[in-house]
Length: 344
Ligand SMILES: [Zn+2]
Ligand SMILES: [Zn+2]
Image (cartoon, rainbow, N blue to C red; front, side, top):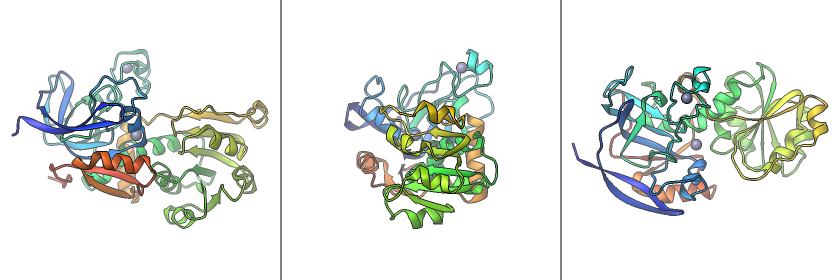
């Protein structure tokens, strides 16, 4: 086995470099993973552009699938050779107040993969065992990768929302997250309205399972949702405060607008629109590891999958640029020489 591995790291904001790094042993509670596939997510911009506090250099990427090739001391429940996933949340501590309350997502001592620690734009990574996700044998590594952030984020938000089967659920934005959210919403039994700008996306949205398509460039999306009875949930997968503002009044009383698209723009909502109708504005952060397991199983059982373009690891900078330009249809996944996770 080679004593070095290839990684695409960011050396300073906006600058990628291909490097060979020495192989290191996993520390206590950690595993070492031979990476097979790694999704490219919009949140990678937080690392690449340096909008998160980054200690340079840093390897981005938090939709990682690979095979464990070494276990650190004290790791239980995982074995060498097992195929695993790593998402944005890099593993909980187990002893902070939030962990002890069962709220693993909000652990106070959790690193973000590819931000505080090196992530998936590489052939190898070290990960905390508490953050690992099980990969079903019937999902390839490439197919599983985008489900670890884009999939989990949308699945978790819908699963924990107040919507019940038959309720109207709107998905705002049909991109990397939105095209998965529409499929999950349909498979969970909701009446699904997809909202995007322009008529080009209408056919795709219907194919993904949307019952209704609302062109927000041609019509007032809030009024269109009210004409359908009002949404119990609006899942906002696009970033930008204005998009939330212009759809918020499309909620029925007791409805919630759940924001998944991170951005610096403030969100303006009139207090009367919150109070009358008792509507809620919320955020949701990926999900815990057991929900990630469920996301992958649900996806495999229901045939939910991301539309994927693959690129070789060496092409990471170009793949990242394509994603940032909004030209990826819909998820870029980097592949390495380590294979595509065919079941052993
Ligand atoms: Zn992500
Ligand atoms: Zn904790």
